[in-house]
Image 1 (cartoon, rainbow, N blue to C red):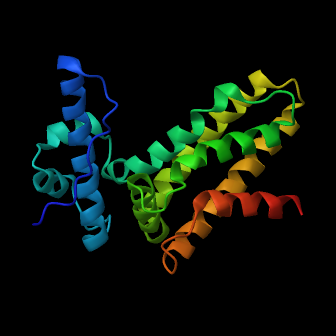
Image 2: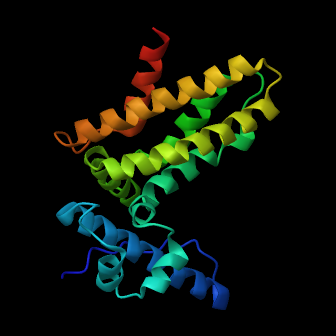
Length: 211
């Protein structure tokens, strides 16, 4: 089997012996994830085993489970990375505006990383979300995680804003819904327009949600 394309490791990882180990771990992580995606695209999630992913990636099953708990988790690596980017700015939420506006601004700032539709980050995110759209097993994995992640987001926002619980929960739920709609629309539009911009679509979604 042809090995999948392996994207380069980020050059801003620490240098020196520790940096080398971290780069190797990151490279292995990427290779396993890319292999899982390739196999799922050709055979489907249900038709692919952890053993097949491990063999194609050139690692043992024991090594696979050091990086990922399940085969679905391996395929979702870049979606989790996307959510990590979004979470990165939550410690700087503007408490002078409403919780929803603060969240939307934070998300918009984070999405600038995905401005270039030809970038590695966009290509990875687009690929995994196209697979999510057609694979129930991946959607189920996301649904299970979304409960925990939403609760964590509510907790973060609650600590930042002195607002009623209902306002906080609505801010979180609506912000996530707008973001999800933008992401799904971007995936659909990218199939006919490779230059479709996720940040621009998100901006439009924010405007429509306020109409």
